[in-house]
Amino acid sequence: MEKLVFRAEFEIYERLDDLPVDIQELYTHAREARDRAYAPFSDFTVGAAVLLGDGQIVSGNNQENASFPVGLCAERTTIHQAASRYSDPLIKTLVVVGGARSKDNPEPVAPCGVCRQAIAQYELRQNCAIPIYFKGGEGPIYKASSVADLLPFTFDDSYL
Ligand code: THU
Image (cartoon, rainbow, N blue to C red; front, side, top):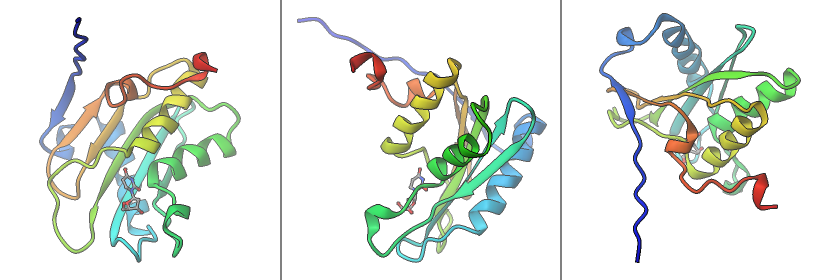
């Protein structure tokens, strides 16, 4: 029997002020987008924003539905929107902020499994890693340098 061990490194920033200014600006967009989230069923609101290669910023939020699985997470709303508005955009960075509307949550909100898979497809398309910053409503910001660190054994086109 052999063992395979995954190792991943995450940067942790205590405050938004500790982040580079372009990431702080992305977070301003993500927080504004979070305020426009439609989450009447979970009351859990999430905002996301991406910085594109040409400097444009696209933001989005979670959109829920009475038929629960129909709803979409903030991350996919955002990255799919960017790719629909601009052909083959280079996604340089993704930031995420979220939590329950009713209480403070210091724990960072990482993209869900489905969103990780979606982000992985964009990394493949652009052949370039997408750094992901994620935070709760309060508390520290975590940075992963690629979705690969959040999704080992990613399923991709090479299996098809
Ligand atoms: N949600 C996101 O938008 N992103 C995540 O990374 C986690 C979950 C949304 C989906 C749903 O509308 C609500 O949060 C509760 O799961």
